[in-house]
Length: 292
Image (cartoon, rainbow, N blue to C red):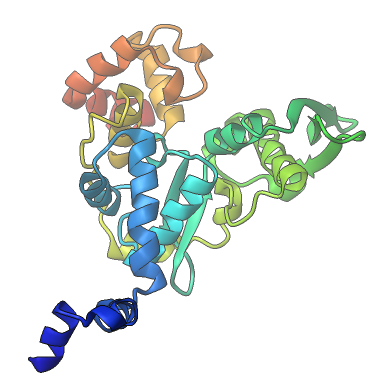
């Protein structure tokens, strides 16, 4: 008690010294996690106009589900570094083989990182076909304002293609997306993130399927667009965009469905209408996929 009294009422001649001692004795050192995590969350909360506490809860229950506090902090820092919005699926997380979390940036996120870079001055794509007329490669040329020579990167279909619906149905679009990501990385040194195809080699898909049920998306109307909510509902039900597009064309429920390339291109009114008719939409998707 005597020591506390001396700190509260320091002698006039030793005031400066005692105040310094008080700071040393009463201040608890903070770890890097304690000091960085609130700051990173506050930055992201400010960017997307959400309260930090609500943002943390929503991240833990949706796009960064099952991440530890340390992993969540790292993901938020990466998102802040590249100005990405996880609720628009510009960046999201999956468990990696052997443990840990892999930050995955969608093609929309890569495109955003590219076009917002202050040195970016345009991009061009060139496709080449083999003798039989089949797609062979795609070359991306990125022009930079501060360099005399552009960055040119070529990706080959044989090295990139995966046996998935998007690759089988839209090989040129998918190879272009893959080339964009690689060219952007080489041109501007984007690090610490992967694109969706790269992540396929490190994401532990089997573990995710066995241990986790399909994620239940928590509604966040203040940060998610109707298009994003619709995409989440369709994916949660076990379908993909290709099935949705087929259903839209066959049923006539989505105007010009054959000309859209992603959920984000849907008119807002159409997305809202389909969200209100969830049961009918799911039934239609099952028919389109041949499950009924």
